[in-house]
Image 1 (cartoon, helix red, strand yellow):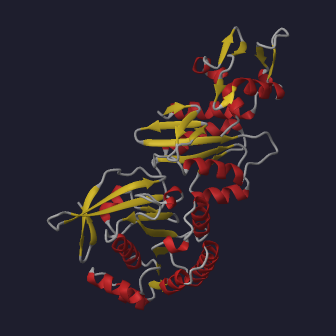
Image 2 (cartoon, one colour):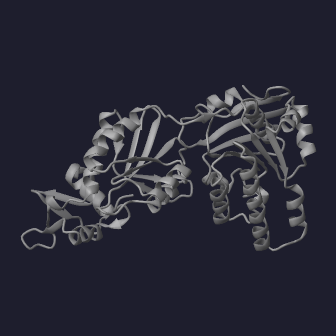
Image 3 (tube, rainbow, N blue to C red):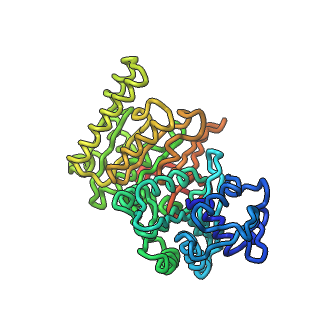
Length: 430
């Protein structure tokens, strides 16, 4: 996010009525309102910052009224103006700046929120004076906020003038952050208008279930990490196998990592569902890597949480080595919880950041209850979350439902849908 003082300056210049409770603009002078605050900081601090930059100076010697030095305006003001006009020209409802409360309860500020016909973007603008080139810190700051957003349809985007440094560009690709770049502020509006007017052009991969593809807005996004979370026996493993088998039939090699079952058990389950897992393993299209014994031994050793974490990291490194050797395009980890035995925010974050280094479309499964309810810490860091529920009625009838809780970067269905599991197709969503 841009410096709050620069955002305040932008609003003073473009829409002073929007900040009338913070500053009064009278006859070309700026008069701060006593004890007011803007974007969480006292307005006096924002004014002092603008004075330090040489943008405001006292009017007629007064310390309560200020005039704007228009030839000293920071680059971000021009960029905000250009982006705002481009978005409005493209038919978007624009809010500059925007405040959104995250799932954690924290209030996050963004430079721009743009909405139109179901498409939503949150932009942060990075326009430092030359020769500074924005990099990974800007991407990390933007992604940290977006990962906490309650609305999965918000598409994270950075407007960068001048372009990102190489480390920032690599990080933006890994985290799924769109970047609109230009060498000069005058060029950025046209690029933003083209970006928001073009249909989302990302590579989608079928889940193996046509109905789920439709709910996700086209399927999984290639190279991202997804979480399937749900009750015991709700169909998490079935969906995972369905995904890998469908990929194998398309000629895409897969890796199935099991942490609570043996390869024989996975093959038996697949055969009961009518999936040709055994044949795909023999062809070399799917590799089954069982880590069950390794994790069972670790648990039975009564190791300290710190020792468990170190051992899990070693197992993860072994997994990276296997991926390097086999080069699968699709990965399933069923289930992911043994990799993060210490259920802390930082531990889960670091694990998933490490997993993202593989740059493979990866499906993780996890059961409800590990984090004390129907949620999982992993949800904050993955691109998409699919929630499965299984309910047994007093009559003995089993009811299963599926809901796409999150799919960052794509417009998706948010309703719960009943489904059944059938031999042959697998999950059939009604």
